[in-house]
Length: 277
Image 1 (tube, rainbow, N blue to C red):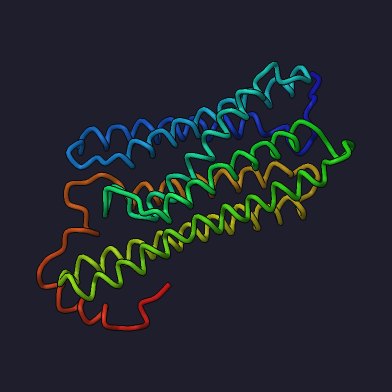
Image 2 (cartoon, rainbow, N blue to C red):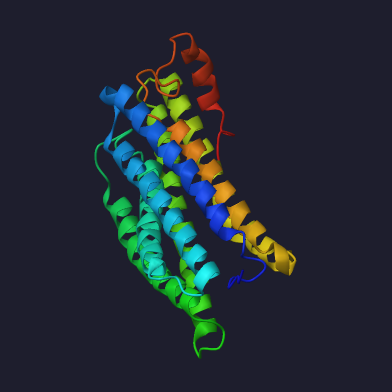
């Protein structure tokens, strides 16, 4: 039978199908967790549910897109749906990271002015990045401005990745300042630890998907180009699992409810000036 995909991409329909099924199971379990702990569900958990839904839809459309290209040579309109769901998914991902990083709906019910500005910068930049992604995906090096759109996409992606780091750093600094005055050392130490872990996970995810995946695409043999896609999707799934576990809706979250005997040890830890990023 004819295969219109290149040798390095012929595995992609099966790969995207497997990951879309995994995300659908993930979404079903997340809905179950939210339902069983509905008294602890915040607005951010609803956004996280939407993120999982659009990630699954994005992968389904990617699988169908590649399948029809493989069989017939044309995507039959699935590429349009793929770009739509990809845009919504990417905007939701960056928004969720910013909102969790600011502590919205966990530590406070509102956003400060500078945090709103980060969202107002990130979302339009993501619109531009997705336009560049569509141009890159639907054309090739033969068009006049293809290299320029590649550079635009790379620049915008780097700016967005840097922008979403700032709210996490602000939250960590704010928690350090409040921990010196409110007398809740153990709880503040737990929150500081949580947000520092979140910072490390976000940095690791961005580093892997932007640098390691690009390196894999560069060094992989022609027939194994799909390996970089598999690595990217595996890293994304691991990132989602870690973040959703850290900020899951539970009645007694070990990060926020601690025993009184932990207070003295926590105060000593908070006095330690080495507790930084």
